Image (tube, rainbow, N blue to C red; front, top):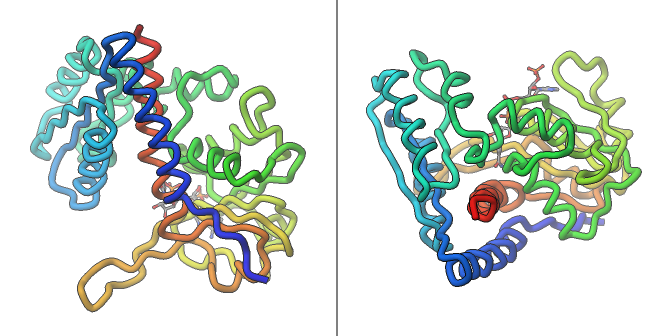
Length: 292
Ligand code: NAP
């Protein structure tokens, strides 16, 4: 039987409607307009698209958006100076420096320079540490989006075995951490797999909920999952182009085969993807609320 589709596009729309109401209330009651600053260095087409999408989402929701596009050869000192100015700007509640940065810039130094109260990506080590302690104000956007997808699809994580494949700082590590937290998280039993894992399938077959973020299509095939698994496919892989030149996207999971065994699964596109920017908007509103 084909799996239930976890439709990120619809869930994201629902959350954005809730956020829009909160923004209206913030404006009416407190005279505060949430503000997000984005910084883009260079001409990378993918990064331009992402920053453009974030700007568009802000405009649609009524979030004040301040975008700075800088040349790729901008010095680290100039970038740090801009971050400092934005840290001190009361109109700005969230700061996002689009990654990756050009090689001559120490990305870690730049991320560390963002005021933790404005670090809406949740990449600053202060916020990463708080996440680990289960006391953070911000949750990183993609993992937070995954938690919301599950919650709003009535899929409980409590007591389940969650297997995460991939240990990146932006997806694998934080989602594994959030899933094992008790007060604010999933209260699940968590296994984290990576390229050092021997016999990956032995672990993925044990998953009640399987979260995959590796960046390679068809890493997870039907013989690697058990009947009734819930699959969250974070991967976004460009596997070709349509005759019109549009990118054809696929996740990290062999969707057609795995959906025959799964109870529920996220499609790519239209699953986790739309949630990431929505949760960035949510964090910006949270930061604005905290500034009152
Ligand atoms: P990343 O930094 O490249 O990390 C990939 C992780 O997967 C690494 O930990 C790597 O292990 C592990 N891995 C790779 N191949 C593996 C295999 N065959 N078996 C087991 N583990 C394997 O990737 P990322 O930034 O997390 O992104 C992963 C995917 O998610 C990409 O397709 C990316 O585009 C997508 N993504 C989507 C969103 C969204 O909003 N939808 C957001 C972020 C990322 P090692 O550590 O051992 O190398």
